[in-house]
Image (cartoon, rainbow, N blue to C red; front, side):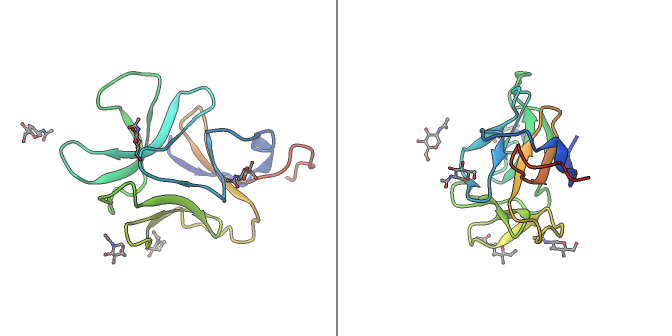
Length: 142
Ligand SMILES: *[C@@H]1O[C@H](CO)[C@@H](O)[C@H](O)[C@H]1NC(C)=O
Ligand SMILES: *[C@@H]1O[C@H](CO)[C@@H](O)[C@H](O)[C@H]1NC(C)=O
Ligand SMILES: *[C@@H]1O[C@H](CO)[C@@H](O)[C@H](O)[C@H]1NC(C)=O
Ligand SMILES: *[C@@H]1O[C@H](CO)[C@@H](O)[C@H](O)[C@H]1NC(C)=O
Ligand SMILES: *[C@@H]1O[C@H](CO)[C@@H](O)[C@H](O)[C@H]1NC(C)=O
């Protein structure tokens, strides 16, 4: 489980819109989350223990626990303090976390600038997939 870069377009081509996806024109902030299609996993800002820091992570949605069981953390080394000002968004083909100064503190850091419409999708197996989005009727490229 974790971050998986998937440039295999066929898996994603059947996705339509939904709350499991961050589109290039959207950003995730504050208490907003995305939830995988079958509601197994949720992604958003969370707070670790008593600390006042926030992290972007993925946790189990179905398995109830308090605090939720985190399965993946993005910005482990670079927490932010105000989740309502910070934003997780697509910038130049990467998923990027912008801190309170709107400066990048975490990025998927892959070269996908040539991909026109990158989206981030949270899958039911807990993987976060960065993908070029194709329309469903477009041919699958291998
Ligand atoms: C963002 O893009 C998606 C997919 O192209 C579209 O369905 C949606 O309406 C857009 N949202 C906004 C706020 O522009
Ligand atoms: C999310 O944040 C907004 C403020 O931006 C607040 O009004 C709302 O109650 C919050 N929702 C939850 C579920 O905490
Ligand atoms: C959180 O803070 C409270 C009060 O300061 C303390 O009793 C508790 O042990 C702390 N919990 C953790 C996980 O550090
Ligand atoms: C945002 O990140 C930049 C670069 O790491 C840092 O210089 C700046 O102090 C950060 N801003 C805040 C408000 O933490
Ligand atoms: C991207 O990766 C480079 C090299 O590993 C690193 O120096 C840089 O800080 C990363 N950028 C972000 C925004 O995480």
